[in-house]
Length: 105
Image (cartoon, rainbow, N blue to C red; front, side):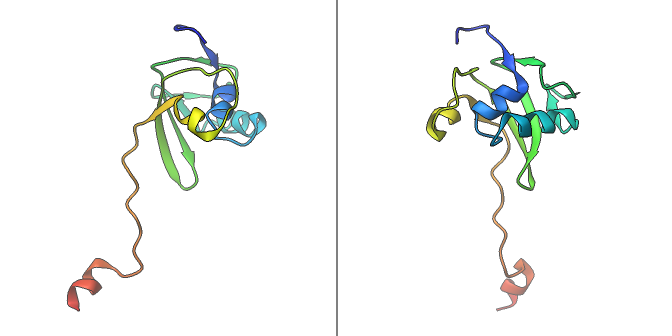
């Protein structure tokens, strides 16, 4: 898609592989669990484009992504990763031993 083009939020989430189906993407938006540039969205048909920032829960963590491109299809994962820039800090791995207990050894 050309610069300045926009796409529905639900379609973009599906193309970027954050949701398995467009129906699931629409549910995330309709339930009010997605924020667009800090504002809560409730309509899956709202248009987004390059430069917009989305915040939404996924798999027990909060994802913050900046849209880089709208995309034209739901392609393979490497192609989907080119549609966004992940702004969330990397997740801290959970350890089975608490840090205090490890220091005592």
